[in-house]
Length: 437
Image (tube, rainbow, N blue to C red; front, side, top):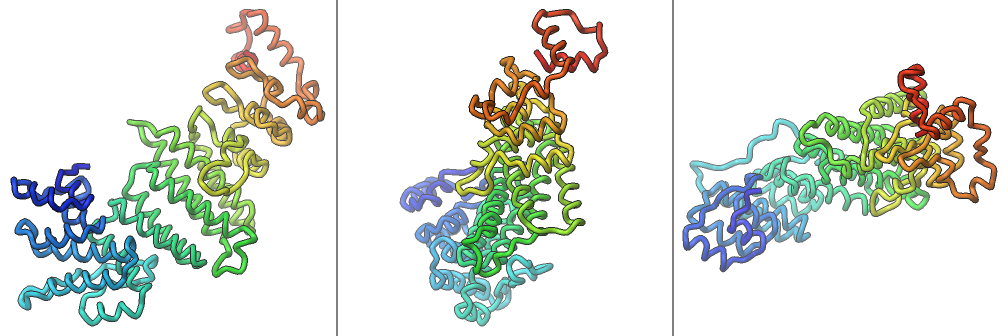
């Protein structure tokens, strides 16, 4: 990202080495995020570097002000020292008013941000002194300062918005948390590459938060009700992330990151099934899932959303449990919204194969009822029944004879004896025979 040796010294607090580098001609360059070594020291909270560089001749007045204000924001969010933050913000304010003929006031914002509770940055000493009586306002000031100086593309900007939201969630104020997290997510989707780990982390945090809010132990806390609209909004943003990813041509989407976001989407669908909604809202949800499936996304190992819905590994999407998979409910709604019941992964497994290897006969019967081919084989010549645990077979929940047709038997014979069939039967039947290879 364009770091220089001065940046590394600033980020690690190595003042003596930084002085030596400057003595021998090092200059204050900007890195890929537009950060000078001075701003890097402010972000990491190394006051010794900031104090030295704000007095250095290479640093102009505006750079000194920005560094001191950013250091104050770091004291609020990283050091949790509100009085220390005020000290640096007052030093910055002194510099802004140091020349009565050239007072450097902050620009008036075009509009105030709802996520920040419509807070406006302080611009006078009186306003600054008033912050001590309102710690919450100070925390919003820190977020405003960071966004103004670092810009929305810098990872720290959205990181600390999410951090502040998490603090609100820990205190039971979920409404404030959700507002801040939505704002950070919008920022990430506007500025980061599709499927960025930071964006995926934001989506997962929402799923984990909503899951907690729906649990019994969350009842009685402030604002614990999960609205259908909140869940749908995050599902829509998750689908948007997949849409952005599949449009990438060079390079294509990372299958591992794609799988993670696909799994998060399935968890959100699972949570939506637990929230009451109107017929109109339900229709909107199904429209969104239909749009999602039309993108035909495939994650790691070529897994489609339907493969993931019937796989137990989809459960382990983050540090905290959200929903349990395989999920009969999620599988049902995916099928209702047009999921391809005969889709294949890289090993030629259908969702029925995956459901069988996860020993889930109920889901197998559901897939069979929706038209999946019962005795199709994967690349190892295994049918779904070959993968099903013998104990499950013994329960007679799946009876192969009920799902084997004369066509199936004929196709097996053709494959077994390597009979020439291409060009001798209709193309539709050729595809049917190939299912039995």
